[in-house]
Structures are given as structure tokens and as C-alpha cells.
Length: 412
Image 1 (cartoon, rainbow, N blue to C red):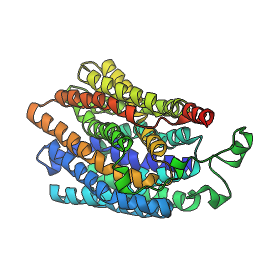
Image 2: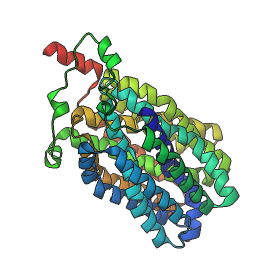
Image 3: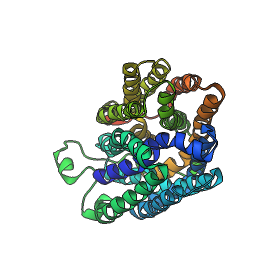
Image 4: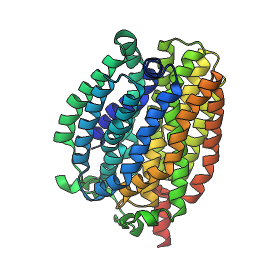
């Protein structure tokens, strides 16, 4: 399950998130008279579509088969890439990215396969999530140089066709033959029979973990709003940086190859950091890990504003990359510890609405600042400030992890 999730992250997040910044300058010149803000709006429209369908989709995933949803998502994303290769104006781009990619990424993305990972792990949850999302980081290491070469050599339209073929041919058979929704489908239990047999303490599911929530109840909890603040901030910063950092590197004088390697360096550190984040989460819980992630991301953004040499740019990418290593696994871990696993996908979906204002504003704002000033520096300062403000959020969430679990056993 972890391997399948990693492959979904590699071809899903990798193609969609890590490559769009490479496409941005060419898309802006071809479809939007050079306006990067106009192209950014298209990806914000996709975020709106994700937020609209996520609560209902999450509720469905809690009760039914994530595998079936992911298969539909693979088909929609593959067709959307083919349509993207043929768009002729900005309105067609908005329709395909906003509706097609919005629906497709929702179905084949983390909302679905994170649900399957949560079904399969409890004590190993932090590490399982960390290794599952490592596929996205590995893609981030490989995709920027590869896509830069692809676009420079053959054009962005050819690149999207390659994305369509690779997504369909690789993911359909893997998900169909190897993905299982729940451990009982293959005669297993959470964390595995072998792990259970080695434990001296019995596995007892907490009442919170088994609780069935409604979306109204979720919106009445401080922890849920705090998670929205934390990961809305992280998500919008990640989206803006992945979309605009490549262009920023070109603007300050680096070559396309150097800019691609900056993106790959950030992804490399994210891949290195994910097992560390997983271990920290399983042992210490969420708070310490989230604070490290937020501070590192803010520090990396501030370093990008001073990146007048290539070594400084690589250092900034490494710091930022280590910070966002925890974005996806910590989000899943925080939801599962504060809300439980029974209504995890519903909570994940409803959370998109809280995160939506952040996601909608960051990428177009960065594009607007660039169009107005010719620089991204002010945008990076604003985004760093948002991350530091989000550091108040962990004070209001459940910690989780082995330390809290042992404390609860002693108190009981």
C-alpha cells in the first residue's frame, strides 16, 4: 500500500505540482500575453473545484472504495493532460486545469490514498505516511531537470502528451492489481499481525479514533481550525513557490538548468526529511514536528530573497525543502490524531474549505507582485510572515505519538 501510494505521489504530485513552474513562462507567453498572474489563476480555479467536491468525496471514501475513486482519477487526469496539450487560449486553459485537473487530482491524489494508508496503520502511521509521500519528493528531484529538457527540446504541448501517456500506462495496472482498500481484504490487521504479536501492551482503539463526525461538529472544534491555519499556510506557500520559484531563478540570472537543479535540491531535502518527520511524529507527536517545518520553510523563503549566488540559492532550497518535507505527512497525522481515523477522509475534505482562502490568494498574489514590480522578493517576505504566524496553531491540536500514548496508558 505504501509503495502504491508512493507511485501515485510520484506521478500525480510530481507531474502536477513540481512541473508546473517549468511550464509557467511558456504558458504565460503563449496563452496570456506574458502574464504569470493569469496562468496562476488557472491553478487557483483547480483549488476551488477541489474544495467544492472534497467534503462529499471524503465522506464517500470513508465508507467505500478509495481504489475505485483513484482509477477514475487516473482516467480524468490523463484525458486532461491531452486536452492541455491542445489549448489555444486562456479560457480553454482555465476550463481544462480548473475542472479537469481539479476533479482528477482530487480523485487520484492524497485525499484518496491517504485514506487507504490510514486504514492500514496506527502505531506506524507517521512513518507509513512519510514513506508514502516520499514518492512526491523523489519526483520533485527528477522532474524539474527532465521537464526543463523536454520543454526546451520539444515544447510544452509535447510535454503534456508525454504526461498523459505515462500517467495512464503506469498507474492503471499498478492500482488495479496491487492496491487494496483495507487490511482485512488480505487477512491482515492495522500495522500487521507480526507487529501486534511483538507488543506487550494490547492494541486498544481510543474512543476519539472511532468517533464518527459530521462536518458541523468538525467546524466547532479549535483543533480543526488550527489544522486549517497551519496547513492552509503551508499548502498555499508550497503552491506559490513551486509555481513561481523556477521563474524567480531565471529572473535573477540563473540558467534553466540551474533553476531546475534548485527545485530538485528542495525536493531532495524533502525526501531526506520525510523519514525524520515520520519518526518525530510517531515518537514526539505533531507539535514539535510542525514547528520545525514552519520555521524551516520561512527561513528558506527569506534566504531566497538574498540568493544572489548559486550556492546561496541551493542552500535556500535545502532549508525550504527540509521544511516542507513535513507538509503532507504532518497534515495527515494531525487530522488522524485530532479527529480520529473513522471520519478521516470527511475531515480531510472539509478542511479544504478552511484552506481554500489561503490557496486561492498566494499564487495569484505572487504573480501580481511579479507583474507589478518585476520581482518575487516582496511575495516571499509576505509568505514567510504567514508561516511564522501559523506557529500558534500547534498549541491547539492533539499531539499524538508514542509519548502521548504512554501518558494516556499511565493515566488510565
